[in-house]
Structures are given as structure tokens and as C-alpha cells.
Image (cartoon, rainbow, N blue to C red):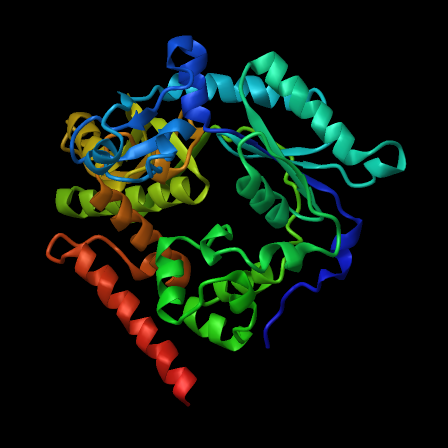
Length: 412
């Protein structure tokens, strides 16, 4: 039996979505007014780097985030490339967060540049949309950054509305018009439907949200597991997820205590690899980046030692793995039995993996998207690192396996 939300309870909700327009670019233009109105790209400067963000002037040439830098510069050769400064972006994000916190009854910080506000019941006293517009003006005035807003009965529709009408968006989707608004849109406009999911659906002939709504729930569950239920709900404009009150998470960590103390270096490093894969996936899943890495070991005599290092913001397995292994090699110098190892990622900021890893290549980004897709579909333990196997090949094999399964179910 499948369980999904009915839309009946949504009509009493009022959810506002705020999204900073071209945030990285806006910060750079605020810091250097000479960049205003010019094609600007933030991202990796090497030929194999990718676009993290770009100005609307650059977008007119077809440039977009996650595009290979060499291709972006072919499309827009006059664009100025800036490597990016996550510290500055984080500081400006904090400034906007403080402005919202001083005005909103309940708000959630969904990423470094977007927020949700639960304004349910506000219309009993004054117009919620009018209040949202006034808040937007206040943010623009005090932060000197452009920001858009969308409002509807839930987070999903509000977010899509903001994205559709940016920049300088102020859009209200009245209750009852969710399906009408979403229907003509491409399926990749729906949050959670990323490149892997949309490619799968395109192969099935599904292009628009209206067509996606016609797909049986059983088909979507067969193709995407429990995420299929969420996709079905979203296609129907249903999203009862609450606005989670904002709180700053300090770190993400994991550790393992052994039943028998060990000095097996190969085993210890293998465990550390699994730990890094776990915490890195959690980072990407929470749309966060870390810049401080700590490795912890506890010896058999209970002496505990740690070593940490600050690095550029990242959520990439391959970057974190290298750092963790280097820290472990420096830390483990007693040649004594070990009873516990641990890894902690801290100095967290909001930032999407796809748009914030300035030095990653297009291949890196596509690989992580595919790996995370499979982990969401089948569980984190179903795809693990193995030095003797080509991970890209395993990802493609996994995708083809469940595509075949879905086709078989449709034929039966």
C-alpha cells in the first residue's frame, strides 16, 4: 500500500520562498561596482573547470551553472571569470539571515541563498503577500543584494514560482491553482528531479509536469523507490513539508569503536574511506559545504588524539579522502593498538555541490550526481568505493538495471 498526502490540508497554509538572485555574482558586483551590467562568470578558471554561477548578461549567451568553463567562454568570450570567495558569500548570507530573523515569525534557511517563511494565519491581520513584498524591499535596502519571492500554499509551489519569474520576482500562486501553474512546466523545474531522474523520464517520453501527473504511482515507485511517491505528490502540487525553524548545525561527524583493538592499517584506512563517503553524502544531501576536517583516534589505553586542517569549502569525496588519509598518517605515530577512529566536518556553510565546487570538473559533478541518485534510490550501502572497480561503470550499470526492471513491469 502506498501512502501519500491529500491536498486538503494545504489550503490554510501560506508559505513564502525567498531566493537571492544570482547570489555569487551579486556579491561580487557589490564588492566591485565596475562589474555591474557585464557578463560575469564565477567558477573554476581552468579549462576543465565548471561554471558555479553567472550573471544574467552571461546567461543571454547560453551560459548556465554547471556548464564546462571552456564551453561557457566559447559562448561568451568577453565574460570575466572570477574564482569565487565562499567566505564572502557566507558572510552576506548571514547578513540576509539576520534581517529575516528579525522580521519573520518562523523561517527556514534552505541553502546559502534561499529561505522559507511560514506566514500562515497572517492574512487575518494584514495581507501576507503585502508583508512579504515589504520584507523583500527591506532585504534589498539593507543588504544591497537583489532577491525574489514566491508565495503559495506550500514550499514546492512557492520555490518553483520564484524560479520561474526571477529575477526581481514577486509572484503569488493562489490556493487551488497549483496544478494549473505547474502543468505546462518542464519536469526538470520540479525540485528533486535532477539530471539523472529527468533523463530517465525523458527516455519514457515524459517532458512536462502535466504528463508526469498521468504516470501511475506504481510506475514511479517501481522506477524510483520511495522517492517515486514524492515525485507523484510534487507533480500534483502537493507538499505538506513544514518550514523547519532555522538553527545552525555546527558539524557532521561519525566514529567507530572496534570490538577488538587493531593495528591493521589497511583495515583502519578502509573504515576511514567508508566514513568519508558517509559524511560527504550527508553534506551534499543537506546542501552544505565544509572547510574544516578533523580526524580522531583513540588508543587501547584510552588516550585520544585529534588533528585538523582548514581547506577550501567542499563536499567532494575525493578531496576529503585525500585530506583524511594525510591527517591519519600524521596522527598515528605510536604504533599502538587503536580502539576508535572518527571523522568530523565543521565550519559548515550552505552551498549546493553542483554550483560551489569551483575547481571540480564536469565529470566530477556528473559522477557525484549519479552516485547520490543511486544512494537515494537504493540506500547508501548499495554503492561503495572500490579501487579495483570503475565507479562510473558501476553507476551506469545500476541505472540500466532498474530501467530494465521498470520496462519489464510495464510490459507485465
